Image (cartoon, rainbow, N blue to C red; front, side, top):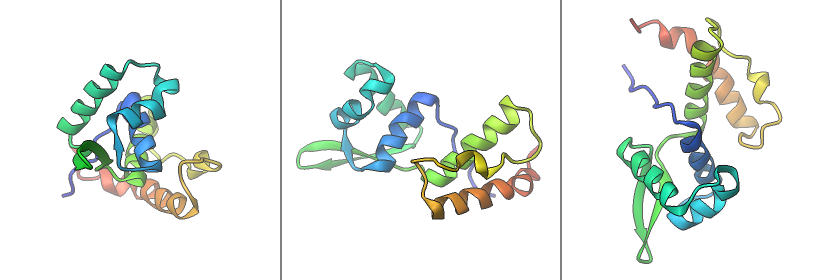
Length: 131
């Protein structure tokens, strides 16, 4: 049985999205990339990065004497898990969300959209083994 993908919080997802667009990034570069959206202090960004490292959502590496971060969570799988969670927990749906809700997204390209559609369609069989 595969390990379930952790569902990031909204703020964690914001940081992941910045890394999916460009990585690796330093804490300062990440903070600058999401500052307008989150409106946080730099210390709040650093604390969130530490929690994401603890949750194994990110990896930290040294580059030119600066710690940089890379996403450990794969983009399409994370988005599928997020969509599944939203569909079942928030919308109380037993069926997968339609992939058309992602059409026009700047976050996924056409190949990733096809992968996402397959992951969402496989949703019921993925959930069959859960109690």
